[in-house]
Image (cartoon, rainbow, N blue to C red; front, side, top):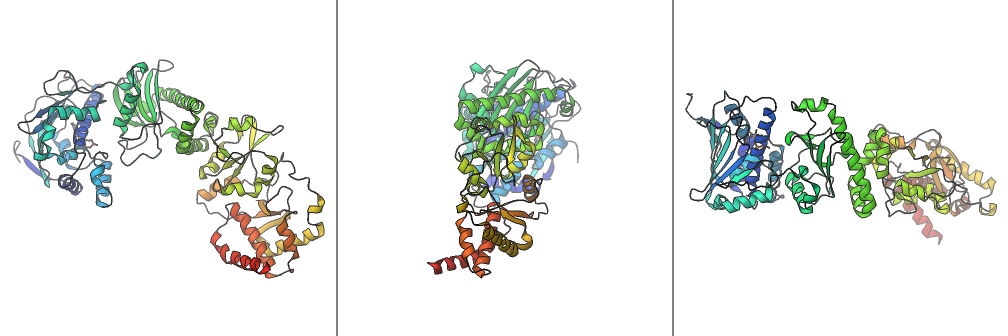
Length: 618
Ligand code: ADP
């Protein structure tokens, strides 16, 4: 190879596949190719700025940082030029010959799946540079790296299997992408159309985008987070969010913050409407964009907010970050914990005030993100106090309303000293739990904890104010009045009851540690409680969810001495089959409401026998 001869390369298999799809399918949203190219240009300028923080030894150090677009209607060409970091020969082969992006891979996979409408998705997935082949007959990329010793290089492709690389004579720093538009894509050689696309997709690109010979940039170009709040319209906040995330749902909340003490910072944060980052999202990871003096230094910074707020999107910009900053030193500079503290407090504060101002919206937030906050309590009990006011619960007395612990506390009965909770599988069936019998009669409120994460949360949440949290499934729950100062007449006489207990013990054998009378059951026949007062049922659940080797801990079966079923059970012929299967069923039902039954459908044959017997009796 001589220095001047073009050299031919083949695209990697995956790239060929992507090109084939882009060229041979019809897409509605072809205009997004321009968004992708502008975004690449802006990234390239950002990276240059980042280099220039530490070195002035670059080509054209004084050149304006900008993007220029020329639309030539007569020749049907479009040219996008930037004064960014540029590419060397190796870089251009490396970057434009292979797919770098994970979203492009996702797109490929989706396109394979015939049921998905790939054409609807292309605008939303950023497939990056290659999207240009939706509109291009050919593309030439000419680039001059910022490194003073680099040679300019040119890359040319038609969307076939190969591309060509040759030396070029470009003296100014940056990259120029020339596109010969397909006949049916001539619209993109019209200036008005180009401007239109910029407004729609790229208004908040931080560098000026000039079109044609105009001296005024087309884009807004403002760092919205540095603009005074009272100058920003609601719609602009939403637009900015849309353009930076491609989330098409409006965010639930935006938080715009500018402070000078204890650290200088600007922040524009958003709480999305949904916890799931859609496959279409531009954001490929959690984390905030971190700028130092308007220069992007980290696209996905995860040290600015605690784990449990990782769903928050947005931008943070601080003048206090040292200028010789690099992605690594950002972490080690003492500034980060300070920024984190300010941001965390602010997010919590705004959420609290949302809860006060607009409870309905807060509930939407809670339903979507509550599980993150619960996880926060589980993972860092030190944060529990901060997070606790944000928690919401349903209760046995108000099963359709979300209540805060504060509200629960304000409704506590005179003399109540603890906060009661019950852990169950789902909000409906937990209400049928025998553990709630006494609380129902007394009208004592009990929190319903029915999400897997709740068991984890409980490990970090043992108290609210001075009130301890107490599981009602425990054997002894102080403070619950005897539900019934029941007339002895209603109860099964002691002698009979003892023989009944014996029957249960015989039938259940090793499966229970004891059978005894309960004084807390009202409408339920039986309940299971822990044999050992010290055992921790919450922890047992945690083990179960973690899929740890989990054996159902043996429990004590407590019976309701006044219950009709037991009275009738006594009337059956002693030792009869029906008596035994009813005992078995009472035990299985108790396991079931506890969420401990290993195989609920195994009950079916027995239930059938019981039905048959019941029908015979009438
Ligand atoms: P992505 O931008 O998501 O990484 P692309 O396929 O759009 O994926 O681009 C691939 C790579 O090509 C980029 O990561 C970048 O390194 C390089 N590149 C693309 N456009 C430019 C440009 N205008 N200036 C410098 N490098 C560029």
